[in-house]
Image 1: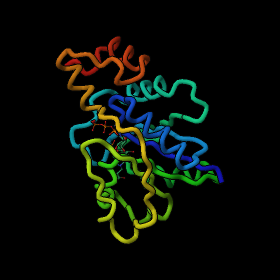
Image 2 (image 1 turned 30 degrees about the vertical axis):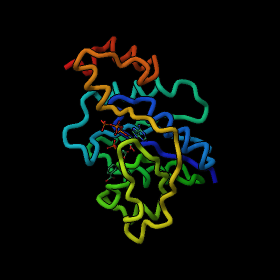
Image 3 (image 1 turned 180 degrees about the vertical axis):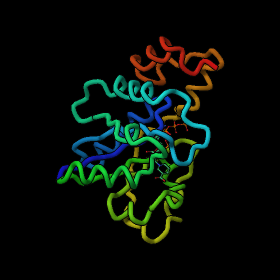
Image 4 (image 1 turned 45 degrees about the horizontal axis):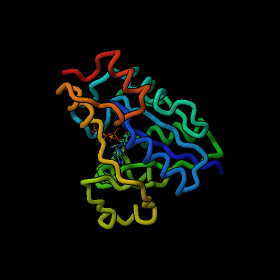
Amino acid sequence: MIQVGLMGGTFDPIHYGHLLAAESAREACGLDEVWFIPSSTPPLKPNAPYAEPQERLEMVYRAIDFQPYFRAMDIELERGGVSYTADTVRELKDLYPGRAFSIIVGADRINDLPQWHQIRELSELATFIALERPGVIMNDKDLPDFLRGKVRRCEMPQIGISSTLIRERRSQGRSIRFLTPDKVYQFIRRNGLYES
Ligand SMILES: Nc1ncnc2c1ncn2[C@@H]1O[C@H](COP(=O)(O)OP(=O)(O)OP(=O)(O)O)[C@@H](O)[C@H]1O
Ligand SMILES: O=C(O)c1ccc[n+]([C@@H]2O[C@H](COP(=O)([O-])O)[C@@H](O)[C@H]2O)c1
């Protein structure tokens, strides 16, 4: 079985926290590939996203560059609407047989896992890889029984970067250089993203 990690996110914009989370999960869990999947409408973020879908996808392409084991997929943007991970994993299993899928998530997302759409069914289709995030206490011991043994914790160098931080700094006219790869930084500047 080819082991694939699914790195879903709003990526508004993508930053080094996402890339290091994906790389840490890949290395620690022996993943063959990590697929970056920008959401159309994220299920639990009422005001998001800010940038256009094609802009967020373009930034993902620029960030992953030519890494042979990273890939970007527009499956959720194509489907449109609210991007439930259960729908995405079902679609991917049909499209790509012979692969085992692990969902890569930061500590904040692990804590809201019980609220995910069709979480019981999803936990039968994939496992989860959980990464720590500065300022977030991971409550993985409080997860419901059916998720026990389905969540693997993975260490990563802690990175206190979020997309919110980047958007806030941009709107204040502050530098966002070195928080995200240079190609993403240039794209944000050239297109005037997150200026207000
Ligand atoms: N610095 C980080 N360290 C570890 N995981 C992260 C980090 N930033 C984001 N993630 C994880 O990456 C996934 C996608 O995150 P998302 O695109 O929502 O970025 P975000 O920085 O959390 O965005 P926002 O600040 O807009 O809420 C989530 O599972 C999230 O927990
Ligand atoms: O399926 C759900 O109900 C669900 C609820 C919250 C988050 N997710 C997924 O988790 C990933 C990270 O979410 P976010 O909101 O931090 O960008 C992204 O792929 C979302 O689609 C999925």
